[in-house]
Length: 563
Image (cartoon, rainbow, N blue to C red; front, side, top):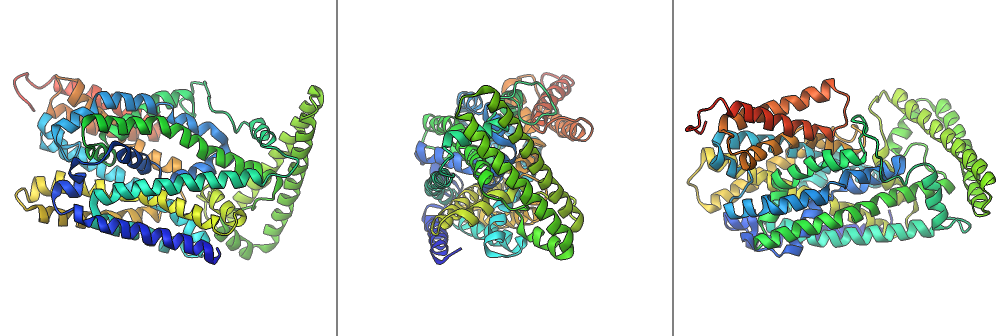
C-alpha cells in the first residue's frame, strides 16, 4: 500500500475510535449503556441490524465464495424476509413490552431461572465463537497488507474494537454502525465500477456475465431437494428460515438492536428495512466475487492467493513449485484464449459454432481448475497443512494487486468498517447477557448502576480476549462465511425451540423447556456426527427436537405446577 492508502485507513480508524469514545456521555446508567435509553430512531437501528450481520466475513468470505462457486449462496437469504415479517408480528412487540434487557429474561418469567441461565449460556458460547470468526476475517487482510503474523493482526483488530465498545456501550455501537455502513456501500460501489472498467476492450459486461453463466456461476435457484447440498431454494426457505428466526428473534446481538428503538413500530420498521435491503446488498457482494472471476479470465491470478503459504512451499520445494507454476500459467493462457474465442463466436449468432466454442472454453476452464487444485494439494503436502484453504484470500489479494492508490485504502477501510460494526455489536450483546443474566441475577442483584456499567466494561474486555483466541484457529477452517454460520447452526435451532415452547405452547413447563433445550443441542451434535446433511438443516433438527422433547416432558408435569 502507498502513503495515500495508509492515510485513508488511518483517518478512518482514528475517527471511528474517537467517535465511539465520545459516546461515553450517554452510558452512565444501566439502561443507557445497554439499551441507549430506548431512544434510537428506526433508520439508525435498521442500519445497525444490517451492520451487525454484515461483517468482514461477508466482504472477504462471500466474495471468495462467489469467485469459486458463483451466486448459489444467495439462496441462503431467501427465507430472511419471511422471518422478519414473522418476528415483527411476534418477537418485537413481545420483548419490547416486556421491558427486558435480554431476550432470556423473559424465560425466567415464563419458566424458571435455570432455563433462563442455560439458554443465555448457550447464546454466550455460540456468539463468542461467532465473533472470533468475525475477527479472523479482517486479520486475513491485515496479514497480507502489513506482512504481520495473523495472530498479531487478530489482537490488533479485536482489542481496538473492544476498547471503544467498552467505553461507549450500545450508543457507540449503533451510531458508529451507521457511519460504517456508509463507508461499506461506498467501497463496494467503487470496487465494482473499477472491476468492470478493467475488462479488455473487446469484452463487454454482458460478455463477462455470459462467461460466468456458462460456468454456472450465475445460478441463483437450485430446486433439487438434497439434504446434503448446502445451498438450494429449500435449504434457504426452510433451513435458513429457522436460522434467521433464531438469529433475529432469540440472539441477543439482534434483539438488543430493536430493543433500543423508540417504540414497537420503529423496532418493526428497523427489521423490515433489513429484510428488504439485505438480499440486494448480498447480491451485489456476490456479483463482485463473480466479476473478480471474470477479471481473472483475462489476467493471470495467483496460483495460490495466500502468499505466506505459497512462499513457504516454494522455499521448501522450489523445483516442484516451479513445475506447477509453469503448468498453471499454461492452463491459464489456454483458458484465456478459449474465453476470448467464445466471446467472439457467441456474438456471431452461429449456434453450432457457439456450442463448440463453449465446450472448448469449459474444457479449458476445467483444466485450469485442475491445475489450481494440484497446486493446493501441493501446498497441503509441502507445508504439512491438511486444512489449507485460501478462498478467504481471493478478494484482499485482488484488491491489493489491482486497485489504484487511495481506492485500496478505501476498500480496506470498508472491510475494517464491516468487521468493527459486527465485533462491537456482538461484544456489547455478550457483555449485556453476562451482566444481566448472570452477574446481576446470581451474584450482585442490588448493586448500583455505576457498578453494573463497570461490570459491563469488564465483561466486554473478557469476551474480546476470548474472541481473539477463537480467531487464531478460525482462518484454517475454510470459507469464513460458512464457518460462522456452521457455528451458529449448532445452537440457533435449539434456542429457537425454547422460545417456541415459551410463546406458542401454553402447556409447556420449565422442566420440559430445560431438558428440551439439552435434548435439542445433543440431537444437533448427533446429526452433525452421523448424518450427512448440510449445516442449515441443523437449525430445523434443533428446533423440532427441542419443541417435541420439551412438550412431551412437560406432559409429565402436573397441570397445577410450574416445574
